[in-house]
Length: 175
Image (cartoon, rainbow, N blue to C red; front, side, top):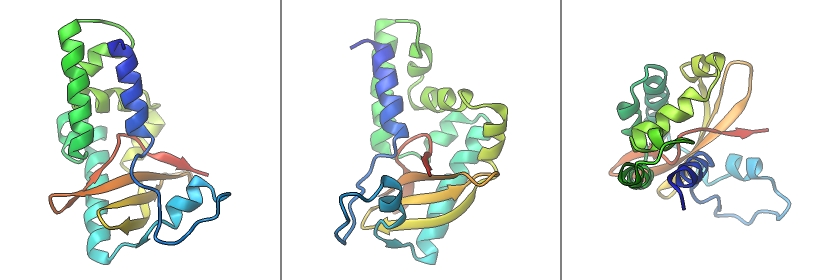
């Protein structure tokens, strides 16, 4: 697989939200992904919600500021490790094209690339998100948020070392 293909795969895998979407209650087979996310687990406690909100806001603020390495500190280790392995392959193969330059930077390169693909208005909206819900179960969960204009997104969360980390680099639209 080429480095460009690995980059595309990793970006899609990280951006799709990941995580376990099962709940403790049975769900109807026809239930949409959006409904499963909204009904996942339980609403977080105040403390859990504040920690998760701090993670997503810190991540978004770092992206707006162009602080790619800092943004990576809010991402789960398993995702950072994936990006770094792809970056190592990109550096070793010295391929250029379709994201291999960004991939060679590992996690920071992936966050930078995901941010650069946004329009200026979308980038500005990163700093203006409004967290609407945090759903958790065991060490996993979702944070739901709205951007100016009312569009709603979710991002997967994972509890790691006592802190909530993001499982991906971009939010998934909830329609």
